[in-house]
Image (cartoon, rainbow, N blue to C red; front, side):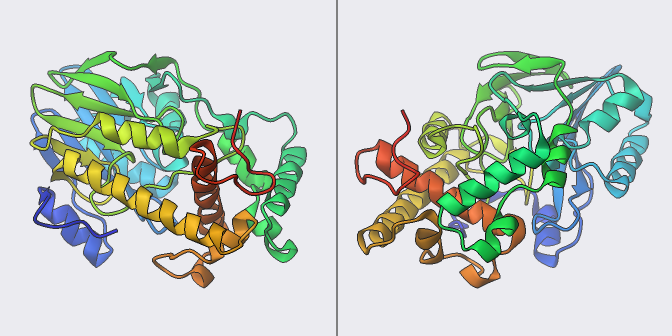
Length: 347
């Protein structure tokens, strides 16, 4: 969703220009000891992750190192080399959440340096909590059928065996960062805030003295982050996302360092815009339900999608369904609607 340009101040002008031109932005020095480095996200509309390198004497902490690919690894190491940091000199890796474009490269970096890996206290990799990948994929296909997905698209919507095994190969954390914890690096004290919604244990990092915030995917300048009802995940993620957005209202003078798109100021305004977008979408979902839609798929295909429903395939198709399911669950747990079969209010 496009924001009101007058209400936020774009500070990453080179990043925005690169985003508009669909090229990688330059690596940049944001503040003393704080550097942004783009890492490619292959075959994905997001194109890249903005990783952040925090340097402080002998310490080098990488926040959201990005998707694990040879190309991305070369990009990150080249940027570190320009900062006179070798691959063995990385001391820590922080991922704001467990998604592959954030946590993905953590294991490779740790293997090459012995760096510790940190995730949020509440971030549990529920999607990979299975014993047999084939059985799990079959269960997810049954879940998609319960959501009303046509048989010819069930396999497209469900988690594949390969995708499940990929999630399992992601790094496990050595450290956990909870609400109110601090991380001292780059001559700064980063205050941890838990912001569940996009994932159950998403975190953001605040440098209150330097007025910086590493926002991960919780708040982006233009895109509305996906909030999904996922396998064994948060049973009411949209509600928790709204609560997380309300936690960060204010502090509009802070510079936001997001994991995608470009830097900006106006985090409180952006949080309010995102909450209003959620309200608008929930009203749209309610209207479709009131018109007689009775499955997640039926609701989803009648909603407004920026690229059009017919253009959604593979992961984007699954995310659209899971986002719709999150809205239906929220309406049910709010007592506004009874939900749909197989997707009533969670206990």
